[in-house]
Each structure stands twice: as C-alpha cells, then as structure tokens.
Image (cartoon, rainbow, N blue to C red):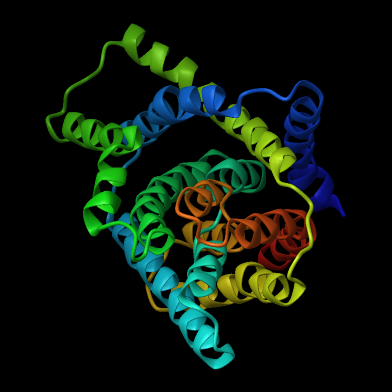
Length: 298
C-alpha cells in the first residue's frame, strides 16, 4: 500500500487531471502534444544524454529492447496463426502488446520509484523505444499499405533523434555548453514529464467505450502486463546489467500499451478500436500490476 501511495498514486492523479480537463473542455490535444514532442521532449532527451555517462550498460539496453520486441512479436504471430486471425487483427495485437508506454507513464513511475539515477536510465530507454515504435509501429500498422521508407522517414522526423545526436557530438568534442543556454534547456526539460502525463490523461479521455472484444483484450492484457515483464526479467539475466538498470527495464516492460500507437492504428486502419480498447484497459489495470511489481522488485 505504501508503494501505491508514494509512487503510483501521484502519477495516476496527474493522469486524472488531464482526463477531467479533456472531458470538461474538449481541448485540441494535437497542439499540446506538438509542443511536447518538438520542444519539451527533445530538451529532456538532450539534457539526459549530455549529462549522462554513456557506457556499456546503454549497449545492453539496446540488446534488451530488440530481444523484448521480437519475443513479443513472435508470440503474437504464433497466437494469430493458431487462432486463424487475419493479418489486420495480428497487426492490431502486435501494436497493442509490443509497444509499451515508457514515456508518458513509465518515466514518471520510475522517477518516483528509483529517483534521478533510475530516471536517467528511463529517459534513455524512452528514446530507444520511441525510435523502435516509430519504425516497427509504423511498419505493422501500415503493412501492405506503406513502404519501409515511410517507417524510416517517421524515425528521421523525430526531434528526439537529433537531440541525442547533438548531445553525443558535443560530449565527444568535449564542448562545454554556456551555463545560461543550458539553463534554458533545463527549464524546458523540467516541463516535459508533467506535460506528457497530462497529455496521456487527455488521450485516454478521447478513447470511446464501445463493444469490446474481450477475448482479444484479455490476451492483450496478459501479454502486455504479465508476459512482457517476465520476458524482460529473463533477458536481464542474460547480460551483466547494473541492478538499478535491470529494475528500470523490467518495470518499463510492464507498462501498459503506448497511447501513441493508437494514432498509427487509426491512421492506417489497423484495428483502431481493438488497439484503443487494449490501451485503455491495460492502463487501468496497470495501476494494480505495477504496484505489485514494484513491491516484488523492492
């Protein structure tokens, strides 16, 4: 109960504020999310990579993300074949289960649970997941409708990608940024997490309660909230992870479905109702599953 009150509840309350404001005012989420994506998140990413000591642990993180992604994709492919689902349904299940909400949800949870050190790892994983989601998410949402070039372009259009490159280049050249300029980035970066949390609450408010396909949803919930962290735990045993990073990755893997992926499902008509439903249900149930997982990990 202590973990829920100190770690999960503060995050949920921010989501609730966004949810209630959106229900009340019916705001244009796109305008707010554009500012978050193109201004706040790149500032946060730049600050994290510019101040972080990049080491072999970050390479292990890349291996972790790739292994986790393909493990869940393979599970979905086998499940869809056994059930005789169409390619569209298979894509919808992959979108719902292979991509977790490591940004709007995962980062603040890890900040409250593991402090600034864990949060730095979380932001690094956030960037990695964003790149993976923008490439593979677009691919599976648009299978048969768009080329690989579209997926590559979506990654190149991510401002965070260039923030990482710029930060690494400055570190490599030992360039010391003027303190007043870095302070500007610092102020913007501090606004990123609360803003994206409110945006998630607003996005959830726009998901319509409809006639849910509970068979698909139950499967999605089990894969996203239970199987994914179990696989993550197994992967962390394969590499000499820093104990804190291992916990961050396992908790990140247990996050609900990414709200961003709903946009891809809608754009390419890849079972948008199914993806939206699994996103909503996993977000609600994660309140309990994440609390339990944090208690287990300590």
